[in-house]
Image 1 (cartoon, rainbow, N blue to C red):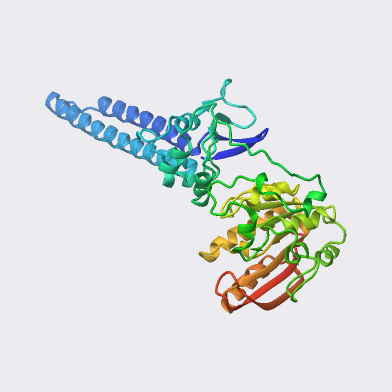
Image 2 (tube, rainbow, N blue to C red):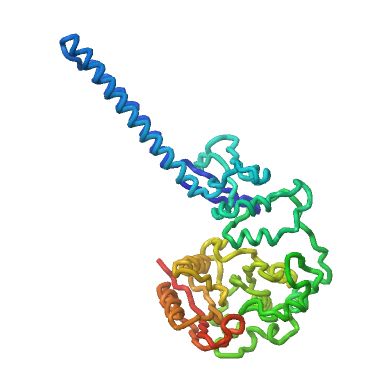
Length: 419
């Protein structure tokens, strides 16, 4: 049992293939019918000589057959219930009760299955198209229904913040909608590559749902360890990033690129703030995709206004890239997903998956709350067998969190070739 994702154009459709469990249930039913018939044939043919004994024997055999049939039917019913439950767990969204009165009609329509017009596909074995929706959407069905309530072919509600709440709750991917997203008449955009380091105007982004309504307000806030005044491209703090270091943990971009031996062409920046890492790489003809969310600020639109590629994605989502495609993966403290150690392990394995052999993993000023956390991260990295090209442990004041000096780890690691 299961489902397979197939990329079609710019969307993803999930297909359900024939289930091994359902096949097992069918085999069990056939076997039960055969054994019951054989048992009945034996019971009615192997009868005693005396009539009274024969009548008693017939009634006894009928009772035994009835018990046997009831037992088989109970086993089949139990197997079918188990199969249905397994399907719900695997497909996730099927556990959403679409019969509830507060479920939006558009959500019901989107979640409908669509059988293939020619039946089973001979190459893939799939029989129907199943829309892709995050498994955790069931836990936020009321909010999801609110998101899917709109006028079809009309203007979508200005509810990007609702969508982001769903994403942060694990409801990812979100269902598609049949309405037109709000547009912003972007004024004052610069051509590339001038756009990389030119200030972005306030009229180029959507400020709805945000406390700040301009970039001056945002520059006065400490949004994260990677974004303290990060929207102020005229300040030396931002436009000198990766060119001049303030401590031994601040690696310079040219030094890191030199470690790649000239083979760095495309990269991925995890939680890249306002996109300055991608901009610095673009100056050197390296294309970098920046993952981001609009938490307290319009990060995605700001990055796009600089002529860069923002990827609206939470860290709980599997990276939507094929294996071994990036030459470089860059991450700072945004890599810290918290929770159990296994959560970090899942994330690190996904980083390893998209990074090619010989590619570089740049861990940039990763704050470790204590020595124990640093040791745990070190042990995890060592299990991947990466070559340590640069490895620096220092201290920095956590101006966003504790306000105290904390252990900081910076490293450039090279992925090994695994056979």
